[in-house]
Image 1: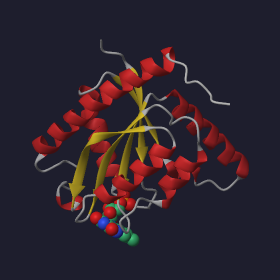
Image 2: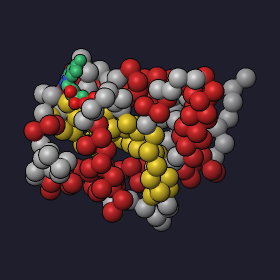
Image 3: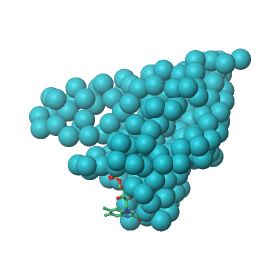
Image 4: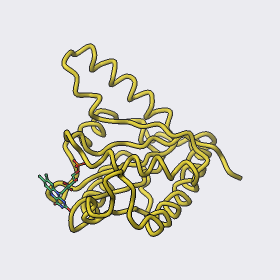
Length: 189
Ligand SMILES: Cc1cc2nc3c(=O)[nH]c(=O)nc-3n(C[C@H](O)[C@H](O)[C@H](O)COP(=O)(O)O)c2cc1C
């Protein structure tokens, strides 16, 4: 059974001139052909607003999108062996919408290709009751792998990794969606 689901792709960097845009664009170009999902994007840069009211509006919209999502794909760089403060701020701002949903990662950076940031994020998402999936797409020395138009110079290898990720993410999204809809988690007094 193939269940259509909603996937939220989350930007992991808010830096001006961020490489994250290139990697997210690559994901959004290829993933729709690999999954049966409605894809939306969540960008923590939207939270950089001056007024409190404007921020409340953005927080509300992001909260609604996170709640609507059945699965998450975090596109994260690595900064000093970790992930960005902006991404942590986004995750911490919302407690409930992550629980019993899968989280996959596409990561990038220098020598480690962002994998150390991903390992840290797995701990964070475990605390929120989310299930992180094994298959990850990683770009080491990412800026050397894309041309000036943002196209991968050797596209097939990474496309195969993204397909593997999509297969696992779809299984987890469908399974956990069914679980959330049909099995009540008992509270212990
Ligand atoms: C302060 C800083 C620390 C970084 N630390 C690492 C690191 O520990 N490991 C790594 O692989 N790349 C590291 N990088 C490279 C970044 O992952 C790379 O610049 C990436 O493009 C940042 O993502 P962004 O451009 O989307 O913000 C670092 C970059 C900066 C500016």
